[in-house]
Amino acid sequence: MNLMIDAKSPLPVYQQVIQAIKLEILSGGLRDGDPLPSIRDLAKLLKLNPNTVAKAYYALEAEGFSEGRSGSGSRVRVPPGRQDALRRAMLESEFRSFLGKAVSLGFSRDDVRQLIERISQ
Amino acid sequence: MNLMIDAKSPLPVYQQVIQAIKLEILSGGLRDGDPLPSIRDLAKLLKLNPNTVAKAYYALEAEGFSEGRSGSGSRVRVPPGRQDALRRAMLESEFRSFLGKAVSLGFSRDDVRQLIERISQ
DNA sequence: CTAAGTGTATTAAAATAGTGATACAATGAA
DNA sequence: TTCATTGTATCACTATTTTAATACACTTAG
Image 1: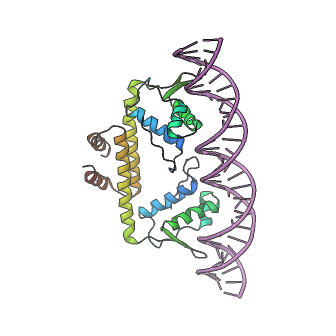
Image 2: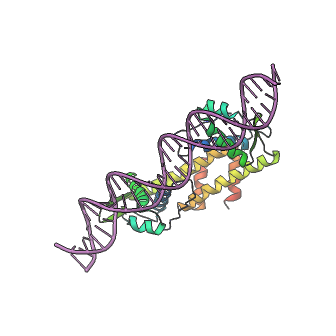
Image 3: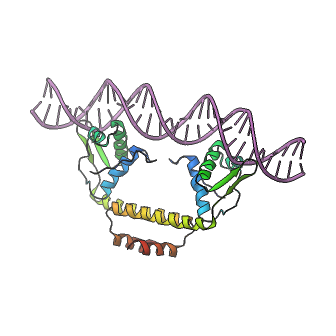
């Protein structure tokens, strides 16, 4: 797993950890049943306090992305079908968010289409 | 001006005020020379402490979006040409951000193009 | 000029979020 | 069992954010 933590980001560190792991799950890098690094190991790797990592793991578990057991460790818990559905849903959600901002800025659908043409080549 | 403040948002209130006004400027709703509401009026309208609004105004001025004078009030200060440039730059920045997320999720350019086709009609 | 309204500045207090230190309980390998 | 490792829980500390109460100097309408 390749996590990047930006201490200067306005986004809290523990949320960056959540996002990074969630992204790893959604993109297929982590699959159902795969073990997550132990809280202390990951904390040492990222030079964070174990509590910060624990907070992220707790949130992931609350969202149904993982399962932790004392003594045993934490494992990814995502029904195989759900991963792809979530992945597509997130892409669509992100695009709609972008579209909303574009509209707020006063751009038309055609303006957006034109930008996309120009950029994504 | 139509400002929406979400007290439950993780984004600090004063930053929401900054964003909202900045967006109003970039979208053309507020133009060079237009007066901003007085700090006390806007605070009363949004049910915030005047200091919170003042903090936002201070930041806007520091970024060069406005100019405040004691006794006279605050006015939008954006060179006419710059507004459109900023507006386009922000749209492009937002799109690149979206594109980056899509790639992180493992989607190809074609996947993205397909989604855009489907949604933006 | 007077007075109301303006932005600015200072200081303090409270609440919340984030991080850190430590102890506890469960698991599993030796 | 023994012991190292695991997730969990609790408490405290720090920084940030927000609110609050004033005070000050400037502008402008009357």
